[in-house]
Length: 253
Image 1 (cartoon, rainbow, N blue to C red):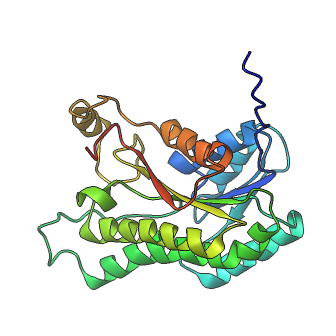
Image 2: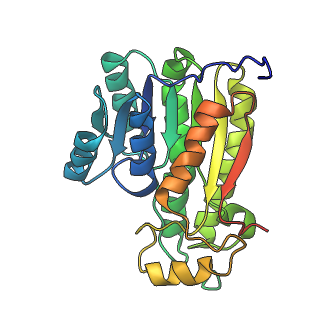
């Protein structure tokens, strides 16, 4: 016995996960609920799927809530709904987003419309969520924001140049917000690569597996791998903020 006192972990009471009706967001919502949190499952479309996620979560107090992260009005309505229901927010996970695959060398194919929509959903959207929910996070206990980024921000390889640029912006925003929101709110980026989901249209599991076999850890990243990293930031990294956590099987190396 060392005699060292180990403090109890701080479990968030209320958490909101955008994009919580599928993939990484669904896995994070499941992990948070299993710890005892009331989870708001944010979604843009597929309401039935969001309701199914909520019904499958452990515990009680969960809520499916439509949040169009490219619509400030929708975000404001969601913040008001969370305020009425819970009166606080301990965790915000910005997982919602979308991408339109365009080969990196097809500059003409990356139209202004595609570029603007990609940045709106993957960069402006997370910022708008933080802006709207900051008052509720200020009322939270041990509050934390986790932005789901992408290793594409670091490698320069991704579904499109717009997507990797937007995710690089998310990482920069994470660092800046960590300074702005301290000391009450910690801010993290979790930066995965090649996760086994249907996020990128036309990308098959076989393609992901072949890439994974060439990585240092030779493992295909699952949504739960990313979820566990997000939980580590929220619960365990209580003396950290403004950091980017790769979950990429060593791809960044």
